[in-house]
Image (tube, rainbow, N blue to C red; front, side, top):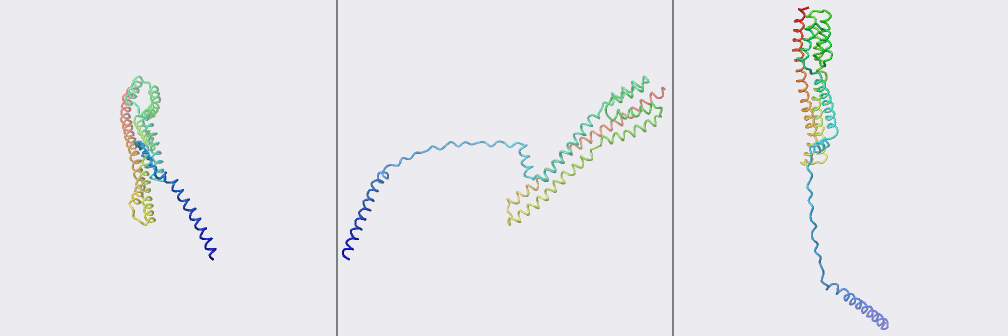
Amino acid sequence: MVAGLFTFGISNLVVAQEEQAQTEQTEQTVAPEQTAPAVQTVEEPAPVQTQEAAPVTFRESIKKQFIDGGPGFMGIVLVILLIGMAISIERIIYLTLASANSDKLLKGIEAKMKNGDVEGAKQLCKDTRGPVASIFTQGLIRYQDGQSLEEVEKSLVSYGSVAGGKLESGLSWIGLCISLAPMFGFMGTVIGMIQAFDDIAAAGDMSPTIVASGMKVALLTTVFGLIAAIILQVFFNFIASKIESIVNDMENASISFMDILAKYNNKK
C-alpha cells in the first residue's frame, strides 16, 4: 500500500508539473498578442446613391389598373369598347364620304336642264357621290320617262327614306355597346364584392387591408365600364348629329330640285 501510494503520488505530481509548464508556455505566447495595441481601421461610409423614381406614365397607370381589376370582366368591357369604336369609325368615314356640296350639284343640274340636257343632268348626278345625288338620279330617271311631277316627288320621298335608313345603319349597335359596357362593369363589381366578403370570412377578421383591396378590385370594373360608355356616347352623338345634318340637306335639296323640274317642265 505504501509503495502504491508513493507511486501514484509521484505520477500525479509529474502530471501536475507538466500541465503547469504547458499553461505557462501558453500564457507567454498569448500575452504579447493581448498586450499589443489593437489597430482599428475606420472605414469611411460609402456614399449613398439616391435614385429618383421614374414618373409613372398615363399608359402604365391604366395598364396597372386594368390588371388589378382582373382580366375577366375588364377584358369583356375592353372588347365591347373596341367593337363600338370600330363601328363608330366606320360610320364616321361613311358619313364623311356621303356629305356633298348640294348647292353646287343643284347649280349644275339647273344649267343642264336649262339647255334641255336631261341626260347630262342625270350623268352629273351619277358622277357625284352621296345620297343626295342618288336621289336626284332616281327623280331624273322618272322625269325622263315622262312621269308627272307628283310621281317624281313620291319617288324622291321613297328613295330618301331608303337613303336615310342606310345612314342610320349601325347606330343601334353603338347604342348596344353603350348599354353593355357599364352593365358588365356593374356585374364585375358585384362579383368582386362577393369575393371580397369571401376573403373576409376566410380570414376571420374585418381587416381594413382586406376590405380596401377587395373593394378596389371590385370598383375598377365599374369605372372602366363607365369610361367605355362615355367614350362611345361621344361617338354616338357625333354620328347622330352628322346624320341629322345630311338628312336636312337631303330634304332642302329635294325641294330645290323639284322647283327646278317644275320651272323647266312648263317650258317643254
